[in-house]
Image (tube, rainbow, N blue to C red; front, side):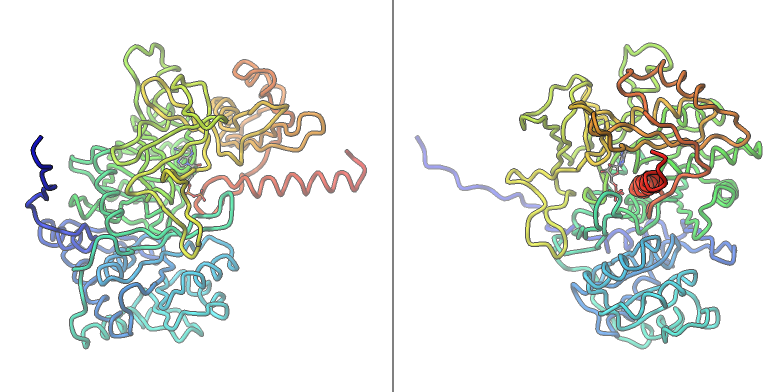
Length: 551
Ligand code: ADP
């Protein structure tokens, strides 16, 4: 036997995968591709990737002039706009950490998050100046506030805030700041989970994970044609689903809706700016569908609506397909996965019938290259891929969290697996389907009832606009399902009719014990139906009924 050969390194360049390179690339390759923003005033402003990159560099210099350096956290409190995107690059490009705050969180949560993050500067959208003012007394580390509008347009405030023009002037007077040139493992941005099921936790993305995430999603969505992208998902939610990096990386025209997230404003912008692909949580598209139906308006440019964040009912997919010729493209991801995960919309050959094909299409999908999955049963072994055996969904990969910001314990097990908190089955074609969140599963008499399965059955009724299921305590069974329904306008939907509809679709033991018709469903900080609020509401009612001797 010969002597062992020494390991051999490749002879290619070391080119750290850092996000500053994305905007530099866009500035050179796609200088004039538009980034369109709707401001608070309703005015539409247009910039291009070259101008956006220039703004980012100037902001970087201004940040350095204020003593911001590598690793410092700089927060934003803003919707989707050109300045917010420029800040993403300005902050991360100089080696500091972009920390987008979610303005829809409760004030005490927001202050807690900003303090845990140790944010030093806070950039505030003009529409959130009041919120920043209310938070200010509780912000321990913020030294400077900057409002994202020229001084002359900054609403009166007690923050001693600079206008954006003044801040940019600081940059003009300052020497060049550092730009890129650091290892790809450095922290790029900090996103807190939205607290749908537990207290918010900070996920600290590396440059490498953000860059890989953008590539993975671009490939997963096959974003290779002429597209105009509109992320309705906010830049502050789960890395804005990567769109802030994807669009300049690929040179896609980008439309940023600012504060106008109501269906009428979204529709108007999508039409005016010829948006081809938009992305948002299901409640956004439920609202848009209701608007289109009510007004008779048509989408003439939009071909695809990316939908993730919660399960999407097949009725919604069908309505957009049949009534508007628009594809609702399901995907799954989470803050902890940067958020790349799966892409759905897969219909295996051999599935017959529209109903079955739609059901397959609506599943969360196959994992993209770079995200490994394992679905484990109660015995900790991988469940069979039979589409029927549920287990805990675990993931690992270069874009998956390893530990939470400020926490000592790792967020993963010894094998590097992160428990998503989701329950899933895997179909024989490797398609993953979420059946519930572990915290939303209804544990009834030793069986698990999927809240998503009941919601799917209820949403398939033509008179239902949206719905949600929670578990309520039951003396004998532990928990039983309670179904909330928001009916379509002018619908006349009775509980009996709903029960008949459901009983044709659900096993008897999965039928909801209670059906409650509501005017509206409460939404959480990321626009998803907030089941925590529904639970609180139902236990308050129960408590009151008990107190009044009704129950
Ligand atoms: P939060 O957990 O606070 O809602 P995220 O926005 O990171 O914050 O949400 C991730 C979670 O959203 C996932 O763990 C999963 O429960 C749910 N989710 C995301 N996409 C889908 C989907 N396509 N179908 C069902 N659930 C989804």
